[in-house]
Image 1 (tube, rainbow, N blue to C red):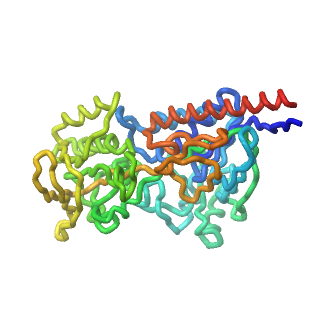
Image 2 (cartoon, one colour):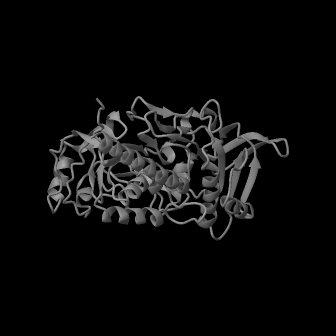
Image 3 (tube, rainbow, N blue to C red):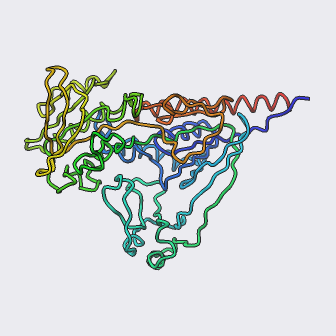
Length: 431
C-alpha cells in the first residue's frame, strides 16, 4: 500500500530581511500562500540599518519601500513579527512547524502617533543604531518599520511606565496583559532567510575594540553617517564628540583568519570603499582623509568601476598591509595602527582620529533552532536540508551583498514552489 503525502500549499519563510521579504513576495506573486516569520518587531533586517547601498550610493528606502508597498498590497503573505520557529517536523511537502511569538503589548489599533514614547521615562539601548544611543522604552524601531506599530520593551511591564504608556494612548492600543503564544503551522517548504550578524570585534584582541572608544565597527560607522543615526549624520569621535577627519578603515577584521572567520565575507571591501565617500561628503570644504589598510581589494564585475573612482579620490589613501595591532595615545585618544606596509616593506605607527574595523559576516544562527537535517558549510552558512524541502537564502546561505542576496532569495523561492508542486503531484497520483 502506497502512503500519501499530506501536502500543504503554504511556503514558510523564516527571516524578514531583504532576502526573506523577496522570497515571500516572489512566491506570493506566483499565487502561492506564504507565511513570513521574523523575530524582530519589524521587517527589513540589516538592510534597514544601512545608510546607502554601493555602488550607486542610493538610500535603502529605494529598495525596501518598493518591497513594503508590494507586501502591503499582497494578501497572500501573512507576516508574523516577534516570532521564532522552535521546531520543524515532517518531510518535504508536509512540514509541521512550531512557532513561539513574544508579546508586543501594542495591538493593531496603533496609529504610530508616539504618545506612549513621550509618556514613559525609562530608556533602552537603540538596537537600530547598534546601541550607540538610547530611545524610550516605548518605541517605533525605525522610520520604515513594518508593521508601523510601536513596541513596549518587556523591562517596563509591571512598572508605572507601562501604566503611563497605556494612559497616554488615545486609541486604546496598549495591551499590558498580552502573553507569549505558541502555535503550529503547516508548510510544504521552508526557506531559511535568517540573515547575518557582524563578527564580535571584541574577540580580535589586538585591535582594542571595546577598550578604545575611537575604535568602532563598520556597521556602527554606517549608523554614524546616516542623518537618521545617533549623531544626525555627523562623523564624531565617541570619546569626545569631536569631528573625526582622519579615519582609518581596517580590512579583513576577523575575516580570512584561522583564529576567527576562515571565509572572505565579500562585502567588506566594498563597504569600506563606500564609507570613504561618506567621509568626503561629510566635509565638503575639504581637510578630511580616509586611509584603507588592506590585504587585497576584492571588487568584481560592475563594482570594479566604483573601486576605480575611489582610487582616483585624492582624499583616500591605500596601505597594503594587515594591521598587526592597535595601540592608544592616552593624551589625544587617537588609536595608533602598527604594522608593515608590504609594498614598501617598512614599519609604520600611524595615528588616526577614528578607526573603523571592516568586520566579517557570519550566519545569524544565535538562539536559532534548526532542524537536524539542515546541512551547513564549514563556516556555518545554511545549504539546505538533506530531504530537499528546505533551503537557505540570502546571507543565511553565503556572505552576500544586497543585490546578490535578492537573487539568492528569488532562486530559493522558485525551489520552494517546485517542492510544493511536486508534492501535490505525488498526492494526486497516489490519492
